[in-house]
Image (cartoon, rainbow over all chains, first blue to last red; front, top):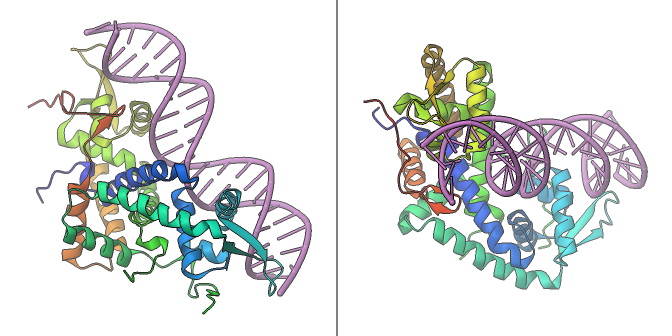
Length: 159
Length: 159
DNA sequence: TATTGTTATACTCTATAACTATA
DNA sequence: TATAGTTATAGAGTATAACAATA
C-alpha cells in the first residue's frame, strides 16, 4: 500500500475530525433556538414516537440515563418538552413535546441540514447519499452496560 | 421524504457515534503498547516525514499546540519520541522518533486496523473503500485560530 | 433483586490565557 | 511585534457510584 501513512488514513481520526466539525457547527447554528444537537435528537425521537420514558429515549439516542436527565432538563427549561408521571410505572417519567416544540423542531431541522450541506459541499449527491447509508448500516447494535440490548425498550408509540 | 426522522438520519449524530466507538476501541487496543490513538497519529506523521516541530505536527494532526505538548510528553515518557533543539530556531523543538518507535508503530498499525476491520465488518470492501475516500475528500482545510492555513508550516523534511 | 430517575463526582479531550525565551 | 513551547485553567461531553422510590 502506497497511500500516505499519515493520520488521515485512519478511520477513527477521520470520523473524529468530521464529528467534531459538524457537531460544533450545528451547536452554533442551533444556539438561537436554545437547543443543542443532542436536544434536537431527543425532539426528533419524541416527534416520531412519543411520549417515551427517559430511559427509552436514551436507548435510541445511545446516551446514558444520567446524561438524559440533563438533556430533558434543558428541553424542559426551554419549554419544548414536559415530564408526565407514567400511570403504568410510577418510577418513570413520560417525556412529551409541548406545542412550542413543533415549530422549533422545524426550524432546527432547517438549520441542521444547512450545516450538513456546507460540510458536504465537496461531495456529489450520490456520494453524500452513500455516506449516510453506509454510516447508518455500520451502526453497531445498541448496548447498555456492556450487554447488547435486543428490545428497543417498550417503544410506547401511540398508534 | 419518508426516511425515519430519528437522530440516526443526522450526519453529526452518526459521525459522533462512530467516532466515539472507533476511538474508544482503538484506545483500548493500543493500551498494551502504552500509546493512545492521538499518539499513533503523531508517530505516523513523524515516520512519514520527521523530525518536525510540535507546531508543524499540530497543523497536520489538527490539534492545538497546547495539546501537542501533552501528546509528545506521553510519547517521550514511553521512549518513542525525543525532543531535540532546532539549530535554526532556538524556540522550537524538533521531535524525532527513537529506535524503539518503529516496532511499536508496526504493532500499533496492526491493532488499529483490526479495530477498523471489526467496526466495518458489515460493509463490503467497496463500501469501506468509498467511505474512507469520501471522508478524506470531505476534510475541511486546516484552520488555525480561525484563519485558513495555506502553508503546511515549513515541513522541515530532511531529504 | 432489579429498574427509573436523580445527584454528585470524575474522567477525557480539547481549547483559552498568560508566561518565557526566542525571532 | 509575533511565534514555539509551556503551564494552569476551564469548558464540553461523557460516564460511574450511590441514593430514593418503585417494580
